[in-house]
Length: 52
View: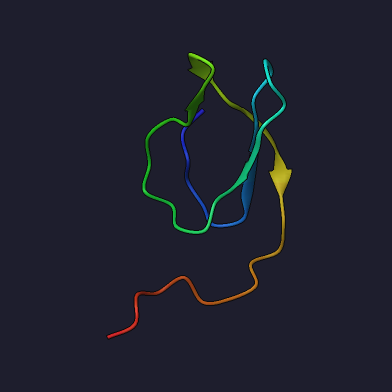
């Protein structure tokens, strides 16, 4: 599943590792040799813009 927004959560179905997206860049998260599953989203806590 592609990473599309800040706050999305992903889980590995093999080892249970979880990832929360802090900067969306597209692509697919891989763990234990397979794509991670989307498990929901948390509210965005901070502006995800890059400081100048």
